[in-house]
Image (cartoon, rainbow, N blue to C red; front, top):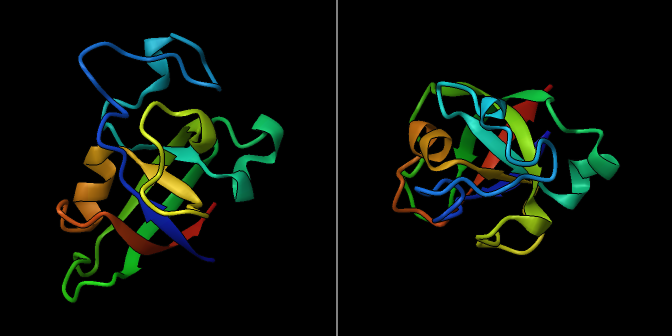
Length: 118
């Protein structure tokens, strides 16, 4: 599936914020910091909590934003509509953590188009 993703500037801060999926349980975050918040399109009334997706960047408005041949496994830990830092583009399907975003794309981009599979 092809969707849009954006990066939240403050999804992880020095003070963890409660998530829609797991509240303040810090064990919800993978040690790799490859996690995301689900947009309304895949949120499914919270059923997406804990789901894992293989994600890769396929395009962006700025050429050479995507890192070629880079695919990551992310875990859904929150709902994009309720994260402290709102998605940078309307209709965002997945809001990636800064680590996840920077692993598949140039971290200076505000949004990318992704392909993902559960």
